[in-house]
Image (cartoon, rainbow, N blue to C red; front, side, top):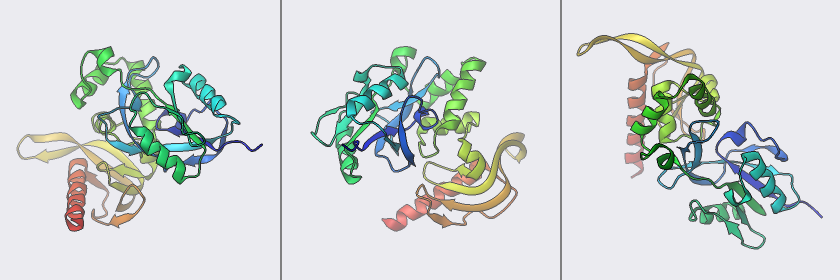
Length: 275
């Protein structure tokens, strides 16, 4: 009897640590688009990525599993996540059964995604936000910034590792905050480029973010963030890898805020043309 085609959907640490899970083939980057955010306080990492009702949707990742039954796959993922099986979501195309407690509406998205890819089932970690319960305040850019600023050195190091190892396509508002405020960019970003906003990426061999003195006629000379291109191939591209154009002229370095504004203007112009 052939094994079922069961996929595990991922957006966080499963990407670099799949201990206990039997995988087949490579990671795939066209998972279902789900509402994900850094919204759960865990024991090891201060803030981790989980399903979050108020979040923007991002494209997740997925991997085929090498298990004979859906129950085996669910049990293995629960063990890996250090949780109970009731916190593992699933959808079975074989009988239409599912478990999805955190955001029940996403089952519709996952069902169609499973059908489109000819899979038998999909599983995922069905945990939600506990930010308010743990910290007594609503999740926001201000509250997250304040929380991370107050972390000790070890906790902040764990958070930085988690953020930088997360795939670039999991680009959420809180990740953007941590990238800008703390300089925590993904490992891929260090090597291949830099997200200018949520949708536009600047392609380069090497990019660094440094504090460089800039003359500001209002506030005087100050330290400001500059993107330093050591091997520049400055082309704007979208999430799907489509080259949008050479909007930014090749140079050794460009100011981060100016680059961001250029990307936003370019995206706005494209949106108006589409409309």
